[in-house]
Image 1 (cartoon, one colour):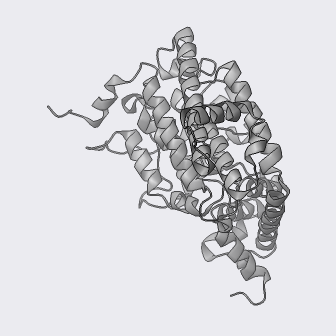
Image 2: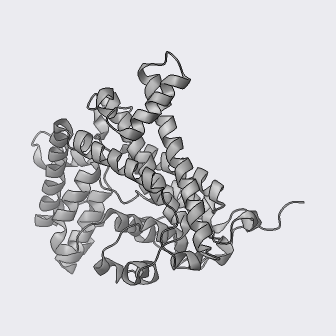
Length: 385
């Protein structure tokens, strides 16, 4: 027998998992789909969005033109989704919701990674600031234009809630129900918590890979990191004679596996302790997706190592300094002369600086690395066209 409804596949989920049939719904009501659950529809809308395609040319650590083999925001999002689905399946959570959140979590990120985000936030300080999680929500709520009768992608509440990982209280007050937890306390769904930690697992491990590939990190340095050293030793023992890139990949595979296994085991303990009977009970509980104390310490050690040895490497800082200058000069030029903006972004000129600045931030945040560099040349290089 074929299932009568797409959401019948959600019957195997745990009581505390999010279900399409029990969702808080969309901001604008739509007829149900014949072939997909509502969270599957969200995932598909995200994949087909303009902002998702742009992630291919937005950086992680290295600017897009520095090499074809380094991670981008797109490859990172795919890796997060893969890890998150594995976690969700083992915890009997909703894999479609986890995947939708994972694929959407960086849609609002600026060009040039965290350097671009920090500089755009500085530019916007007098106009409410810039938060990339809030911008991701803004993308799916307002900026995507795929439908005749509405702005945005009209995603489910739980997907939007998961995208908004961080938010200032001032901005949360403007968001209605999706911002309440930042004002009143509480947690998002377990699916959102899973996507959050899958993000951490993905970027820590692929930043090691990119750091080694670029030559900015050396294997000898990484042997000072307990988690890497133990997994590397295990790889050498289990794969005699392995060396070079193969040894790195064997080590990273074991690191990712160790983190995933620990997260599943510790999260199961927390869930069994608190016994949430529904997603709303999850919202009233402490965080239930977590590493063990020992693994959390090792993960912090790894993040500390990457901060001081990769993200603050002088060659990375030289590039991020250039990137910040590009963002600042683009913003200042557009604020001083809004007529330099493409026509769709000039509409706010007569509505005051606040709206004008926000539209400029939307324009800059939507740029890829190479488009931002090209736009900068068009404005400041007399020979560019």
